[in-house]
Length: 203
Ligand code: GAR
Image (cartoon, rainbow, N blue to C red; front, top):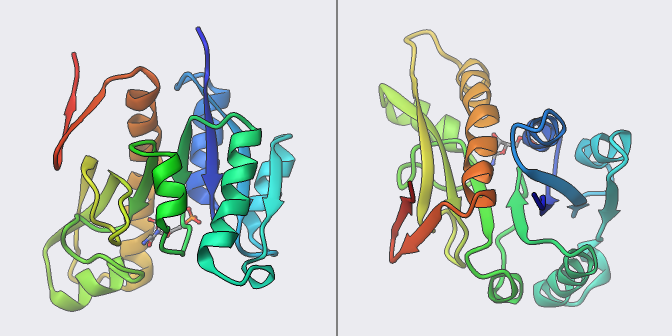
């Protein structure tokens, strides 16, 4: 069976990247991380990739005069590495049409809240401040609008009375690490069918 080639875009510590690498290495998913790309030179995600013998690139946004040109450089690397699925894992940049057109319906993101609630960069804090009793995480396909694409999978997390942003984020992260590989597995097996806003899982 042919492994699906994944390109991961990450801006930070890369714990979700690690969960994807681990699931691939344990053969829980029929996929391999072909390349990791970051917009941050010091992203720990790049070190994680190198440790596993995965190609790792820092593509410096400062070197490009527009978001589109920066993304074009990223697209070139993804294409050179024959990437079939792009996974955003803590990639803190809004994508432009450049990458979305090239990888239509083949870009996923993980978000630390139950979308459409609490989009943006502080999903856990926003949920806590709002006072919801249940939050969680969402894996969704990426469209140009932030955190707005068709939802693939969600996991719920109960908010506890004494939760801080850190404790809540920690429990959400545990679920993220399980949910993202599962969503990738469904993609790799060709089981995801997008119809408008709905993602159906084929039997
Ligand atoms: C994760 O909690 C992910 O859901 C979140 O950033 C964190 C990255 O952690 N993403 C967003 O907030 C996107 N809007 P990681 O670098 O350890 O995977």
